[in-house]
Length: 151
Image (cartoon, rainbow, N blue to C red; front, side, top):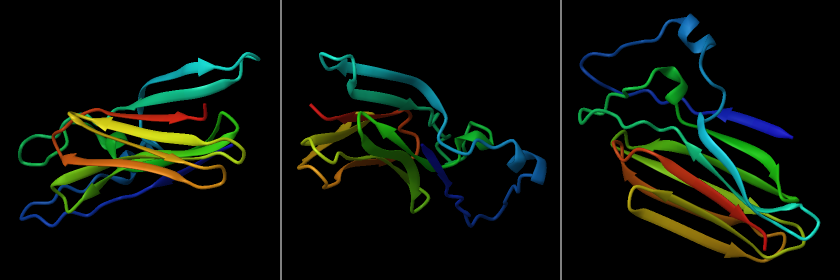
C-alpha cells in the first residue's frame, strides 16, 4: 500500500516564476528516489531494514532549485518490514529543508534514521509507537538518506 502527499510551497520574491499546468501534470507525486535497498533480512528472507536515497539536488545559493518540478517537497507512506514507514522532505522558512523518516511496527522494537550532509538522527521506539527521526540543513545541502529497521 502506498499513499502519497505533495506539499507545494509558495515563496515571496520580487520575481516569481510560475510553472504551467503542463509542468504540474508532469510533476512526481512523491519524492524522487535515487536508490532503494533492503539492508538486512531475517532467517525466512523477510526484510528487517531498508533505506531510500531521495533526490533533493542542491539549490543555487540564491535558493533556486536546479531541478525541475519533480524536486518538489513531498512524502511517501508505504508498508516496510511488517510496519508502516513515512519518509520525505519539506522546506522550512524557505532557507532550509527538513528530511524525515518515521517508522511504526506493531510487534517489534524499531528504529527510524535519516542523514543529510553531515547531519544524522536516529530514534528507537517500542511496538505500536512511532520512531521519528529528522534533520534540518541548508537548502543547498543535497541528498537525503532515510532508513527503517525492525531488528
